[in-house]
Length: 434
Image (cartoon, rainbow, N blue to C red; front, side, top):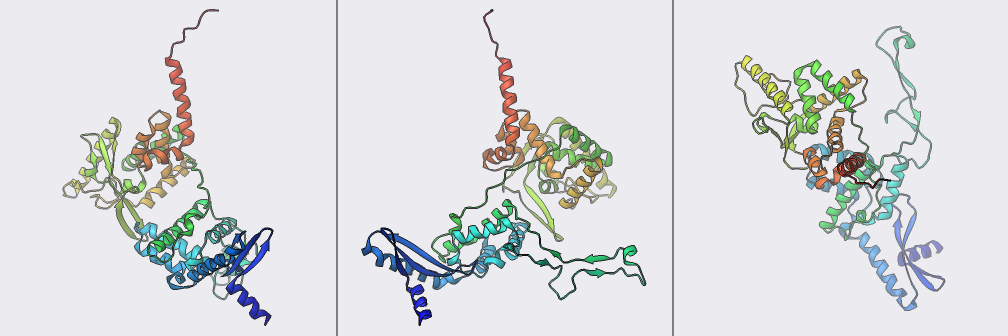
């Protein structure tokens, strides 16, 4: 009988006196993350308002339990991914986050029960440990199949010595907490917020709780461009390997274009007569699937080229024409500027370009990656006093320069100090003699 009374009290709600006010509590079901009972509450000093408050809270709980609000967060995310406009590589990343991180924790929770508190607790767990272990010790097994821990994978050699043959040992090690980065948690928040925003638009829920959720701070970018000395060594090593590779590294260095934009560059985008290059597309290749798409900001941009770069591109064009002539073919403006094919009919693989650049820098003893050349182009321009909007236009940053300012704050400050010194030197001071 006592259990039945407790159940009725949870369903209908109850009131308790707290000082000069009345607190109305209504049972709202188990917590999605902890499984503990949760209540929604509201306080009033007017005893006559207690019943109205209780009725309103009960209606709110009933709304969570009925109709389309029973749709789960996992189902909502899947539905959102079907209509969300993004390139396939981006959608593939979203699906990965959903399957690995979001659905195991909140996938079966009705979207009506996903609150700002639930999301903030979820994000806090991920920042402590990406597996949400809650401090529990356990073994991380190398497979979900039945197995023996510390299993030895023997070499295919008869009557061998495991140590001499260097047989591999698959060990099940104790779990060590690895916090999820703030930027990754923000990406997960973007997925959940996008799905719930769509649920509001489809009238599945009245409001988007992610809109009021406190998400992790966006980490300040810390670009690490090569120094001018290192840049000189890099471009010299590239030219020494071969002229086409040297041209590619040089062009990235002086334009700051992204690797996908570089791979998608065709000869009709290069205007040697006007001294400009147009960035209209980007190329990606993942899991054997090649895709040519819009630029990251979905905008075309035109970059001015210096005389040295124009001369180098003209020589590069001549080499391409000679290669095509050797094949008894005709040059085409549709051909890619950089290609491993003799007729330049296919673009370079962006991943292959990045790997070759990293290997070249490693041989030079320089810690760098291809995207660092983009940083080099930006920082050198800013340090030289070029205005932010011009730098942002060359890099293809959106927001009229806000992204450029956020990423390259330190170099902007350095440029500002240089500007102050330049201005002071241009002013003649007529000081009175002592």
